[in-house]
Amino acid sequence: GALPHMDRTGYVFNGWYTAPIGGTKVESTTAVTTVGNHTLYAHWTARTYTVTFSGNGGPVPSLTSKQVTFNQPYGTLPSMYMTGYDFAGWFTAPTGGTKVTAVTLMTTPSNHTLYAQWLPRAYLVTFDPNGGSAPSPASEYVIYGVAYGQLPVVSRPGYDFAGWYTSPTSGVKVTADTLVATASNHTLFAHWTTANTHFFYDVNSTDWFYDPVMYVVNAGLFNGTSTYMFSPNAPMTRAMIVTVLYRLEGMPAVSGANPFDDVAPGMWYTDAVIWAVQNGIVTGYNDNTFGTDDSVTREQLVTILYRYAKYKGYDVSVGEDTNILSYLDAFEISEYAIPAMQWACGAGIIEGSAGNLMPAANATRAQVAAILMRFVQGVVKAS
Image 1 (cartoon, rainbow, N blue to C red):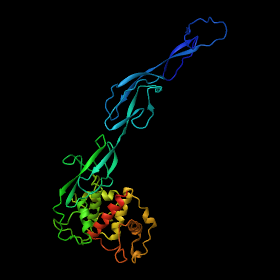
Image 2: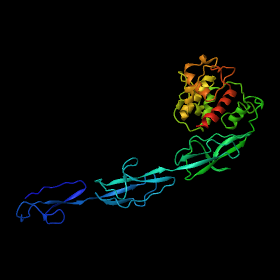
Image 3: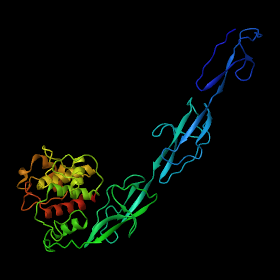
Image 4: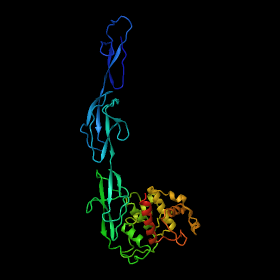
């Protein structure tokens, strides 16, 4: 008579038999010859499915597909190699998923794809100042295929820092946005150009600001206001300070719309303004202007540096334990600037004059040069 039909994921039903393995097949028309109660056993054949191998950004596998039997080990899988990466194995998804090895039982009841997954290698990059000041850090690990990130600032008296390159002379320039493409430990070399413009008529070797000015100019953070003038006593503008920090950051590429009516495309400060605003380092005014030519006060300056330090993840906790009430004008500091001023004083970035911090006074270019030198040497390098 009629016999049950059976379904089982990943298998073909072969029929009923008189034994679990082997035995005689029993059809609906088979005459019963067994005396007494008895059992018939379903027999199954595992299905075979096609497994396709995806390089997932890597090279095409030597074996692009194979047949694998359901509930049996996958067996031999292709080996993979890609420059700058470690092969993590075969997985059921391009990212995440479950790892599959040669002994993994195949339990997917359909044709499917396994994906190679890759782990980028870390390499040690060493910074050779090539005659300049010692870089900090002197070396660091970078990840293959990922941007180098912030690079050290170095200086050399009488020279302009031209950037980091892949060889002592010539080579390829490397910036913060350059993707690591060297699959080995390697060295970047500082390049220099003669600084004919670093002799300013208004900056003398006896001036208190001589060393800071030479430091920031040689590091490529400041330019003169003209070929032979630095204008040390001129006020620092908002456009100037964001440009200085943008240079310190390595001048990363910017994208997105310019939200300010007074920031024209292609100006020397345009990218710096967009970068600083996008990263919360400065804000504009309510009338859709940035105030590029507005002077920066001393409390505004340290607030901008404070935001930049937090953006970079630097330790700003020193401000929590710094008491600035000993300064005669401490109560003149705007409320928003108090944490930044505490941090700047505690970190030794800002120094008062005659017992005053002068928070509302405009910051001059010379003062900013000195403050920035202390910031780079004391905070950036320490971090």
